[in-house]
Image (cartoon, rainbow, N blue to C red; front, side):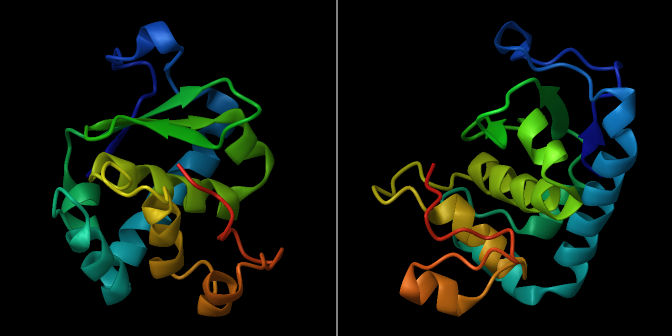
Length: 159
């Protein structure tokens, strides 16, 4: 299964501040990882959507991949960062501060980037659409472009 950097991994993006997940955030990060694994096993729309992305891996394949690393990055503006394509991502301070559901949504968004989301899409909304297919938003938000503040999906997030 994808791994959390708890100090036992040196990120290829260490020069960008990607480090171990701090101890105070480990419980939340473990919860988000477990939920992402649950989504992959129980939400067929998530696997179908992820397979449609440029690099064609299902969410189940990604969360089962031990070469995928989740790091941490101090950042209060962004929710996360990912190698696109790649096997590393970093969850940012903002995701943790906004709560576990936002952290989970951000994790799914960044996992989509590792699978090629937005590489060739000028709208830049493929990664955020992964959040919708993972069950954390409403189609009405996507259709109307109006954000429901009670879901972590946002029709206005790009990139």
